[in-house]
Amino acid sequence: MGQPVPIPDPPGGTGRTPLRDRLTVPVLAFGGILMAVMQTVVVPLLPSLPRLTGSSAGAVSWMVTATLLSGAVLTPVLGRAGDMYGKRRVLTGALSLMTAGSVMCALSSDIRVLITARALQGAAAAVVPLSISILRDELPPERRGGAVALMSSTVGIGAALGLPLAALIVQYANWHVMFWATSALGALGVAGIWWAVRESPVREPGRFDVLGTLGLAAGLVCLLLGVSQGGQWGWASPRILALFLATVVVFGLWWWQQLRTELPLVDLRLVSRPRVGLSHVAALLTGFAFYANSLVTAQLVQAPKATGYGLGLSIVETGLCLLPGGVTMLLLSPVSARISAARGPRVTLAVGAAIIALGYVVRIADSHDLWTIILGATVVATGTTFAYSALPTLILRAVPAGQTASANGVNVLMRTIGQAVSSAVVAAVLVHHTSLIGGHPLPTLHGYLMAFALAGVVALIACATALTIPGDAGPEQKPGTDGRTRGARDEALEGA
Image 1 (cartoon, one colour):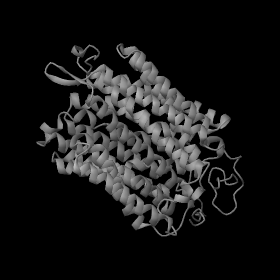
Image 2 (cartoon, helix red, strand yellow; image 1 turned 90 degrees about the vertical axis):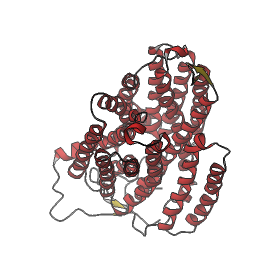
Image 3 (cartoon, one colour; image 1 turned 90 degrees about the horizontal axis):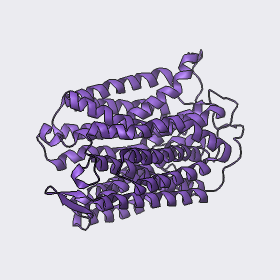
Image 4 (cartoon, one colour; image 1 turned 180 degrees about the vertical axis):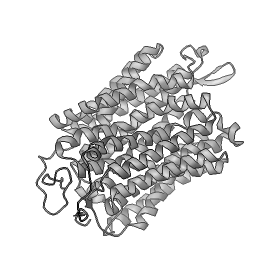
């Protein structure tokens, strides 16, 4: 990788005002929340979309799968592009694609257009790593930790807000109204970033790795398509086995190509360092453990009362059950930043993973009463706040300033893969533990408890992984020629 270079301010000054500087963090956080909301809003529509679009349930499921696949592919690609061409420029483009997808969904009921639109919205998955990289470049060290923690928490905050908001709109208005609302919010986010966020001064110049991008895209599509469709197509079906075989072959060739490319899409030598590689492993495990909470809670509380454990709640009421977790993530993000500052982010990550496991212990102990369900889900959200806020801080302290967006993009990708695997595994567990209720097969309580136990064990493995990450480096050093920030031109940008 080439040395990161500073991009000088334009002649005559930047034209910045104190108000714009103060709004940088809130505007970026709004973009992160909006990204998470956009991924969630389609969930209340899924049962009705076959009727509304005149398509099959299998075709409708691609409105979720398309976003997952495009987000997984585009997150590291846009992160690398941000390091090379400007993080604010790429961030604005990602949010613009998301907004364009919302407008397409608002204008059409054709399932092919809707799937294409949802694929465009997957570009928003790069919002969080790009924003974190901007915060590193723009903020002084004393403000950076809290801002990064808040940015990481927006994933949970937006997911908690998106479900009840979308359910209310779907229940009381035409479903296209929901996408018009998200289009307006998306346009507001794009305008806010253009106005309040300064272009990051640190760049990593070089030639874009097109071959590496195509290889990564092919490997991720094979992997995530196999994981997401395994339950429908059959895990032993020729199509799924072929996809997994193709995943191994493509990633093997891609790894070989990346090691021999002068300016690779993903610096695998950097990934091989324990502080970076183990952080990615912890991200995958944490993503698995976190996502099981949302999946299982939503299904459990909506189950009919005839099951003996279900509460028969509506989708709006279900969203409100998850809302305390989102509020908790918002309130505790400054606390997680202070723990990272005092003890180091790997300790925060380990504590967060342990709290997630504790939350699942609460879920196993009692999943009948609504208050204990909400309590357990909120405890899991608390642990997720600590873990998710620590992960980008670990990456920021372990990679050069010019590679922060791409490295955080890979970390977010690992969380996405963890969530996809969690969805597939939880579905498989529930399918194997069903009983007939009113003539319909529904998961048993034992199946839900098995899913909780599995997620708790994965959280404990994530905790152990965090404790094996090498200790944090010392305080940041004064910069040489590797770029300077606006907020602290004399502060260090962390080296490799």
